[in-house]
Structures are given as structure tokens and as C-alpha cells.
Image (cartoon, rainbow, N blue to C red; front, top):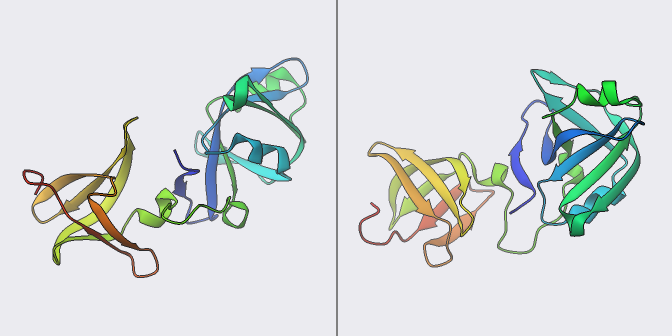
Amino acid sequence: MNEFLELSAEEETVLIGQVLKPQGLNGELKVYPLTDDPRRFLALGEVRLRGAGTETEVLPVRQARISGGGKMVYLTLAGIDSPETAAQYRGFEVRVPRAQAAPLAPGRWYYYELEGMDVFDGGVWLGKLERILETGANDVYIVRGEAGEICVPALKTVVRRVDVPGRRMDVDLPPGLR
């Protein structure tokens, strides 16, 4: 899993977690991390919460802690100081400015960098990468073009080249996928 999911065009924020529920009596939020390294929450200075057609202003992080070997994160945010207030944010996304996105290793990309790319197989345009599915074994890129929808496995043997600035991906589809 990458720290990902999407880039908000309006705010240029990156999704890093999802609020599951309130925790305790002081407005703490239990958050499911959507990032390769949940420890990044420990260094956050501020976040935005988005959901139910609403996005909060920037909320300073008062405290962050990790539990269960990184499986859960608990955030205490300024302005959220009761279980009732925290409950209003159940299901909301936890987002950070794009500039605070964690750097990725070479050969890894944020989903928002890939979505919308033109995808080619042997120089033939297949379509645009519309969305990315996480399957457990490997991601699958959903590409839509003139021939309809194609599911491209995100494997090194299939994805040959990714040019983020050029908005182009070159693939070598196995027989039967084209």
C-alpha cells in the first residue's frame, strides 16, 4: 500500500488515514492509517478532515500515538475535545498538504500521480488510467479507452516504464488481456 489514494485538486492534499471512531473521553480519534509508514503520524503538525461533503479548516495535532504495531493511530486534534464532537468525524478522511507527503522509494508512485496517465502497449494507446484497485496481491490499474475497460496488473513484468512528468505509462500486456 502506498500513502495515497488521491490528490484533491482543490486543496492539493493527500489522504493518509480514515477516522474509524471516537476514542475515550477527551475527543481522541481512532484512525486507520492508509500509508506505508504509520509512524509519519507522530511528526504531523496539522491535518484536515474531509467527509460528508465537508472539509475542516487546518486542525493542529496536539498528540499522536500508534497502537497494535502500527495497525491503528490515535490523534488528538485542537478543537475536538469531547466524544460527541469526535463522533461527528466518524468515517472522515485524514489528509495532509501534498508538500507533507512522505517521499517514496524509486519506482514507487502516489496513486494521484498515476491516475489520468495515458497507457500504451507496444506504442498502441490503450486508454487513460482511471483508477487503481488494491487487491492484496498486487494493485490493478483500470484503463479505459476506445476498446473499453482493461485491467492491467501492476507488476514489474507488465508495467515497463512510468513517466510521471510526461503522463505516460508503457506496459507489456500478457496474452489475453488486450
